[in-house]
Length: 359
Image (cartoon, rainbow, N blue to C red; front, side, top):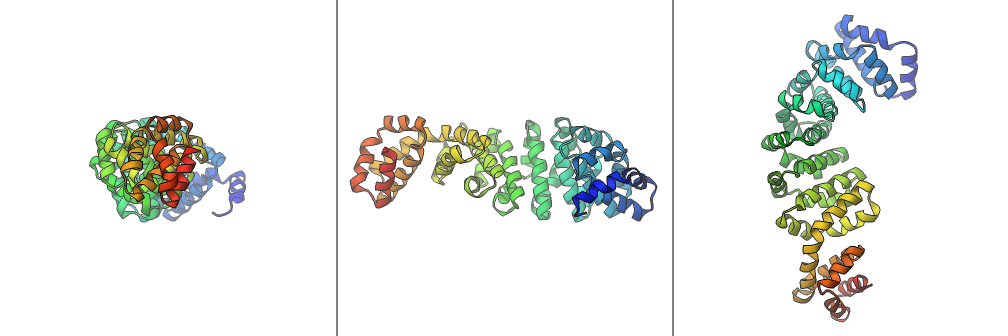
């Protein structure tokens, strides 16, 4: 189980075919053990292909309904492993009828079966043709339920499944929203595992493409945790959070103001240099919507705001001025005279950032 090198040795010794036969002809215990063994072997990409070619998928699907509770759990786990990075297996698993029993296990299975079924459905949902089948099989409500009632792994797997289901399908986006997914997804941005945060951010990013859902996501409190992920999240979480903020600012002045107020601009600017290529692209897109309104508001604050507001405005303009495109906009907005004034009249931080912005 924990020895990757042994997986290869077991496969090379010819274990796969007899293990697959046991899935159909073995005793109940033998079926459980064979399913567990094949699940562990399938973690290896080359062995994954060999297991599928040995005819394992149909008996695995049969075990989802006919097996013991543990056999169902292990079969779901095996289908999860077999569908990782393998579109051919995704198609075969779906065509063999795995989706309805996997959906059933989301509510009726053991704790492990729920985790494994959610993960398998997440993989299957990556394949465009499977999305509708999964949704029509009734997967969305139990997946949403797992976001709150499941284990940490079940939550992260369910969030991943909802992410893939929502991609490029407006009808499914609405179904996910109507099933009550938004608030628990927002909660996972702060309370979930690192992968759960990635998956929840990705799901919300996909959902926010819809203007109505965009409003609901902001009202559910997604903006502050999105901004937190820009600095505290994994590289993938930063990409998804930047994408989520980008979608939330499109054609929504209220969200633009709210996102700027909670301090999104400095970490978005930082991503322009420190982020992945995807993060840079999404951060730049979000900043494109944020900066014009923000610059004008911050420049006005330099003259009319309180000492603290002037300091905050100087900090924001200093961050924005690191981008050459913004430098012209800042100057045209009339920022130079009040920034110069802050060099003598501002707080210590305001003086420092005003000098930085002018530099």
